[in-house]
Length: 143
Image (cartoon, rainbow, N blue to C red; front, side):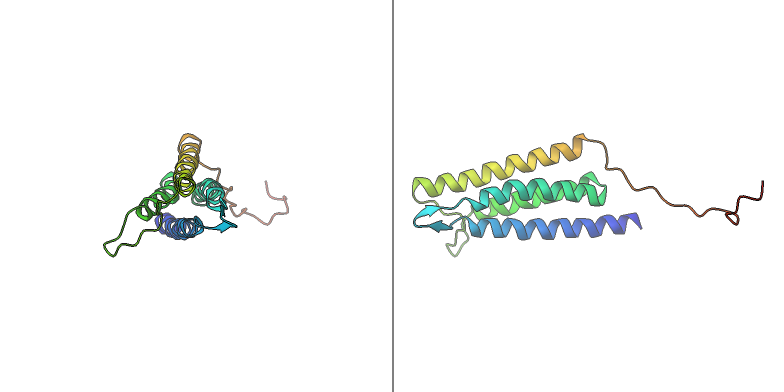
């Protein structure tokens, strides 16, 4: 039963981290009056730290805790590669665009590494105590 529970948490962790990584990549080109809005950088930092921590806390598994960071890194790196059709999600361009793109990759990887280090280096999360049925009538009369 524990294996099935861990597999479920692993699937949830992978799906949420993949969704978040894609959203962050698509937010990178946001500009307001020609000035880039670095919402993806903030989402990469907080998203990676929170997802890794939540996966560790909810699943109780260090392996499941590492999955969001690995998935995020895979999607972020895949976005930097040009497809055969010529599509590129993280294009170069002016110095500001390249700085935002590199900053996104840097802060995302550092935040994920920090969160994974906390999950792997710390003690496993405390599990709630298991309630056991009490034998007897509960009146305390039997000795």
